[in-house]
Image (cartoon, rainbow, N blue to C red):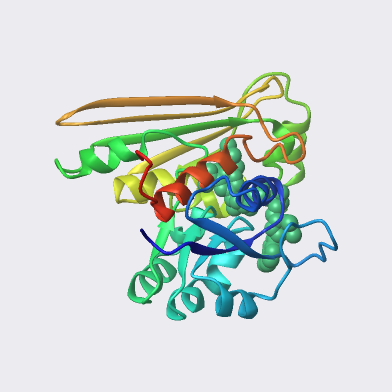
Length: 265
Ligand SMILES: NC(=O)C1=CN([C@@H]2O[C@H](COP(=O)(O)OP(=O)(O)OC[C@H]3O[C@@H](n4cnc5c(N)ncnc54)[C@H](O)[C@@H]3O)[C@@H](O)[C@H]2O)C=CC1
Ligand SMILES: O=C([O-])CC(=O)C(=O)O
């Protein structure tokens, strides 16, 4: 049987709280929560000691990032160089190809990403082996307030705030969109990781005041077939930018990584 994975969880927010609580309750066979890292003091709020990143690297063999793209940029290489594996939720950081290459070259730790809020990535990854896709489109629809960004001008902010139906906020590729909406469109980078090309993935970001559910629609086509995956998630009540399902996607990824016998994964 494999040794128990010693997990350091970075980020005690909408995703981290659910992941950390499940780990602390031993709901992931083969994985144990050793510590939590967060740049806010957590007091007694977390079920494991709050440590610095450096302390976490000394005690853990797997870091789960559920904090933001900046953490991947700042810590990714050091995590891998210390021999610790890294599971990434903030995949948008990997649209920086220089960083992605440095992470690929770093080691001996291994880097993984979770499918997060989007579906069908396993099939898109499989299709890639047949040859490139001609077209890949992602349409993400969210509540307007979850899409507001510091770079937006007054006109765009006003369009978001006064929308009475769906409005396109920005269109681009998976190379530029996740940087523009760092907490809201990591899914675009995840689709690009599956497809293997940032520029092929065209992304449309839509704000809809009636979006009771956050929607991600992936449409892809190529010489071998056509694919469409549509998901509609309830947003997390505390952080509506994040879909409620995301921590469970992280836990699913963790279960696969911990890979205990007695489970069919
Ligand atoms: N792949 C996917 O489908 C998704 C990915 N995400 C990514 O996951 C991230 C976390 O999401 P939530 O838990 O909803 O966010 P949240 O805002 O609820 O929680 C983030 C936590 O990380 C902490 N944090 C932020 N920067 C930090 C730093 N530099 N060092 C240590 N701690 C830090 C914050 O204090 C907070 O406790 C998002 O920013 C986004 O990048 C979010 C949703 C879906
Ligand atoms: O949770 C979601 O629906 C998507 C999200 O925030 C992201 O990709 O960053």
